[in-house]
Image (cartoon, rainbow, N blue to C red; front, side, top):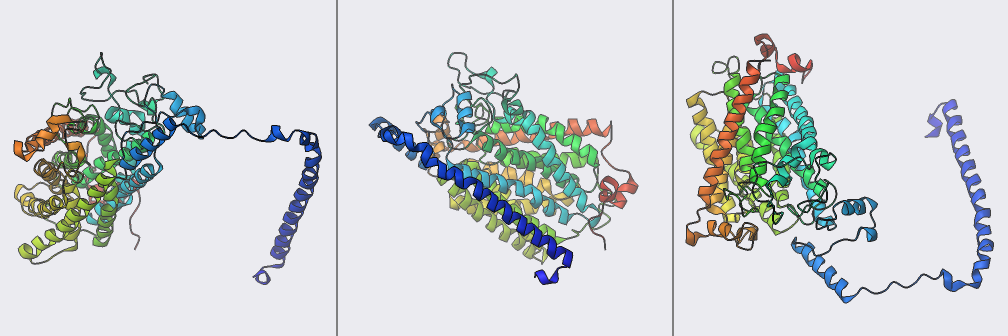
Length: 560
């Protein structure tokens, strides 16, 4: 190899090798005397060998061993640990500091296995937006708008992350201290969290010596959501949900909304729609979180986001599409996908990433996560077969877009139910997902004439509603022990899931569905009309005809 180099290069390489060798020889020569001198320096100490012998470590006491066994059992079963970790004995200075800062909160070391699964799930859910959703949507738009979809997904990722750190995580998953019982200090039911976790707890709004939650968003597990998962890992996991939800709205207004207007819209929408909805449905003191809050006003459930993610984005996408107006030429020109291959790749990435979305929502690598993984697979595969089968018998062709749409619909409909239903329930939901969203997108959309560009309403709003209502009928306490009287929801939750008492959970689910739809429509209308009459929502007709890739970003997706 060296013969192929120029003369100058060969001499340079040889010089570097010789210099490196000289440095190594010099270092060894310097260290050798020091090593040789060490025994002499240590000679005076040889007379007292006992002083150099470390004291034997005392064996653990029976009480310590009992605590360790209990903690191990709790770790395996994802239960509450009994260990109150002593920061002075912990090997990690970072974790010790975090433990010391939360002295009034029950502190335990996070479990590596559960934490590892949640870190993996976080990466999988982020992959759903980048690149999954960007490619799925990007392939379905026309060639001149593919980059605009990618840019919108990327911009939403950055914007929502900033808002989440600034105050979003605390508003959604932080305990609202103003709604705590003044006698017991326990959280009751609140419409929104507070600012204690603003900037992840590093502001004057932070509640000191907090007994309700870890003081900061750090490595200490937040027992309100997971006993063995670090609070900062959970914050990042839920951040990925907050990212993909507004990104789904892009499907309703694709190819016709200005980039600047969309960014402002999403920033406002997070505060008016997403943060309040997510807190009420998922927050430990949320008003609709029947599984974890015995004081919830509406005792409903949503395992991974049928209402919070899919219904909110679907209804908002349709509402915003109506406010923005139809694309130029819609109804007269055939708007076919420019790359079905990209859509296929995006849908496949969504399916894989959705395992983090659904199974990760168990907040541990436990039996509930395993069940969510299983039901997600069954429902998605079933729907991906049923949808194109419907196409074949009603339209004469089973399309690749139909396979992709069916898979996504199956993922959407199983989302609120995956951790609560058995495998048979997953199969039933798969059939529902392959039929009702198909009918909505194929027949109802042309009937009413709305321009929902990429069918975010038909798949996500309608699918989310189907999943939420199906959960009300199919939730099985044998699958999820949180639905029994021993769960945080108490006897009231158990009674709602008991068929001998009517299994009236579906009524609670209908109330959450109605609230989600109203909040999404009203919130989106306020923001949409405010922007329409101020900075405007649409580009000019010339810019829209040229494509948003050029008008908004000065780039082209393909140079042919």
